[in-house]
Image 1 (cartoon, rainbow, N blue to C red):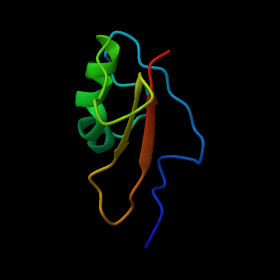
Image 2 (cartoon, rainbow, N blue to C red):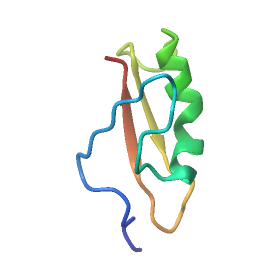
Image 3 (cartoon, rainbow, N blue to C red):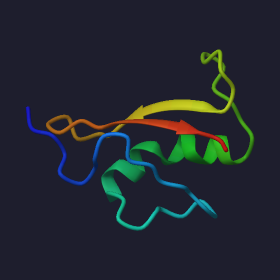
Length: 72
């Protein structure tokens, strides 16, 4: 399995105004956007003990990337 060439381990992005960060992969953004929006508006996922957190992965099954989303 190959790794995604667009992201690096522990890379950080800050989302402002719900806009996709510059240099972010469009497919990955589509995969995580619903939870980005949920967290941005103060929502929480009920199955996570810690509030303001979501874990998502990219839809590219050949080069998977896992994202930890945190409300700051």
